[in-house]
Length: 198
Image 1 (cartoon, rainbow, N blue to C red):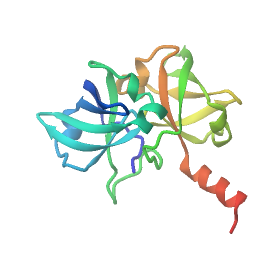
Image 2 (cartoon, one colour; image 1 turned 90 degrees about the vertical axis):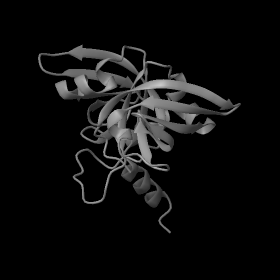
Image 3 (tube, rainbow, N blue to C red; image 1 turned 135 degrees about the vertical axis):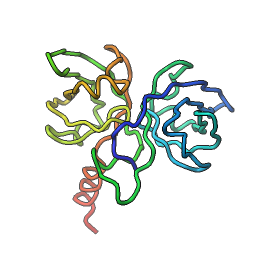
């Protein structure tokens, strides 16, 4: 479980295929790998991955085919920046919202509107996720916990403060770039209970 508060902007070292349907992702992230252990969970652009190797400020994780297909991780290359967050600890502050690191779909940046102190960014919204996204609700974009400011059937917008623009990949991405989306898990559970109250 994560909070959507990015701890570090890491850098992809390598994404090496390990078979027809898997890969090994190596990321440089001195902060998040400092206390890493085999089996720890680290969120990479919003995807929960399991540490298999670590050392010298770098960690490596297996990425299976399901993850490559349902997220943007398959498009990573050496030098690409990535948002990193270690798993939350019980008793720590929940600065964002409950984030599982289970990507629901991929959206794309449609528009960026800079303002004096912030920026409004609009993303495409996959049709199957639109029912879970509400104005003033929470959404995770590339691992960043954000508040929805506007939503339509096919898109939604968020406001990015200077800290988010500086310390995450969202400040550097361009129109058309893909992003990993995770909707609020509570909405999915409520939907299931209402549909099948047994």
